[in-house]
Length: 122
Image (cartoon, rainbow, N blue to C red; front, top):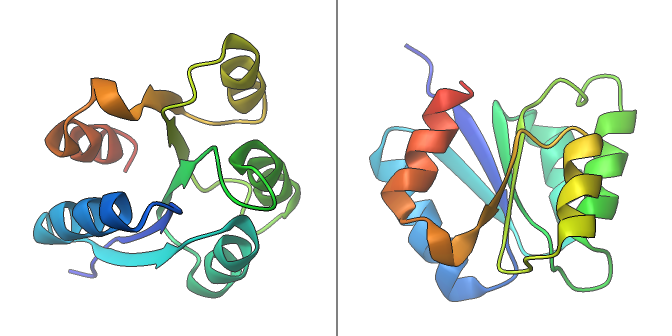
């Protein structure tokens, strides 16, 4: 059986490594980027089964990146889970309107609960 591919776009190195380690132990192939531009290039190259997208990123935020993803015909159907510590109702609403499956506040979810959410959409 082919491994499912997950792209994580997260600029906090420690968090990125923690999620990468946890999710890969669940049997997924993990690819990661630290900013929106690298993330967009990686997503186009890898064509992942799911994207775990931080909202507060350097240069371009995750909501803008989500909009770019959803405008691309071959990327628009990829499920995206937004995850951030930025707990802002306007941003949450915007992410959901752009097609994010969920908007998770990082501090409210354990890595295992994030994996459970990923499995829910695959």
